[in-house]
Image 1 (cartoon, rainbow, N blue to C red):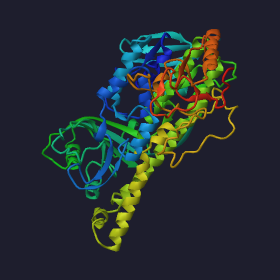
Image 2: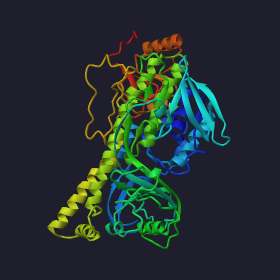
Image 3: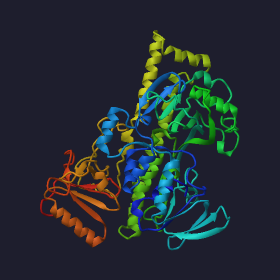
Length: 580
């Protein structure tokens, strides 16, 4: 395993009491920011294991997170912006209705230590500098793993009941077990440039934003180091550490990690290159500010998703006990900021199922529902994130960044201010391109509208199809109790009002949950009897005046039973008042 994806899995509270080992060939947790946006769904997962407060303490929140701007330079002219990640009033309203949690910007280099600490304190042996060399399935279905300690160079073996490949885009587990993938050609190459520079004097409230996309047609044609059509400056720590992401669209002729290629514009560039510092100064718009380049990390834009997330398939003679999670299963650009969030949610979905099977509370067929529920989510993520990258080109074109010459590109910029027919067309083109990018910036629906369909979701009582989203499903969340949907959020409290708590906070924690209302005593008794007979933990809460909790905002009206990891597993509307 490699950091982050595996750490999220081994940190899941449902695994409490089980023993495992987390290995990584890296020497420690992430030393660069990498993934950073944490959406409310992922924060809910962190809350379930008690890490929400720590995550919020380390994260960037508020206005510094809630805008994306297109500008000539940080200090230069602004051409447009979108309000993002809860910054738009409509998204803020929908977020407040859909979840008790908010958006965070928490770099991977800060998130991973939180997850590692939790995992190591809850039964997981964490070993860095360790690589997986080979695997062999044993007659009893277990897997013999050969490992190598990269410090001592010694090899050793261990046997495991389950193997989780959360080992990134070059997954050893995926290769060794021949997981099938659907792949499309690479969209191009990119490079992350981590640098320190104190931009506090430049960061007025009006300029504060999570991402600043630089649109300077003349800079793109000046020679020297190519930084792509619209290099994106991202704040890592306010306002002195930054990550510059440069993307060059088009399929590379070779993997930039493998060596120098003419189609790789970042080949041969080092962090000490004076031209690189000069380019960063131009992007900042102030050459007097000291800049220290800390790290360069090239990467390839991928459009790849595993067809199945577990092997062997359910019903095979061998046990289903090898799984892919995170980037090992879905590989894509960072648009929508869904990568690490989907990693966390993959882990959250799988962990409780592993725990239930390991404790003999469920049969192994439950494990196949991981693919059924999560693979469609990963496939959608890969598709949507690559489409979003392609939509960037429309904004670049509107700002002259794809023009064949610097003069033509600057002419497009100049036209934006002209009171001419060409100026009107230029402004309309830019307006439409930025409006299309709002979908990415306001993508609450994409983060929350997962609809699980599997044998773990009971649909036999349903008389109609799943309700449709009112509006754009990428933007608007579907708040529904239809089985397989996310548990609706509603604020509850005891009648004497101590502290409001969300329905989301009552769910999870390794148990199924039954919410009842008035007349639900028989359902409570039935749930308690099932729990005693099967050993499956079921927590019961009554919602209503005179019951366990009152419905503070009157948003909770129906009685529901909820699957352990958050989605609604089953619902009934016409409840008998006396018989379960």
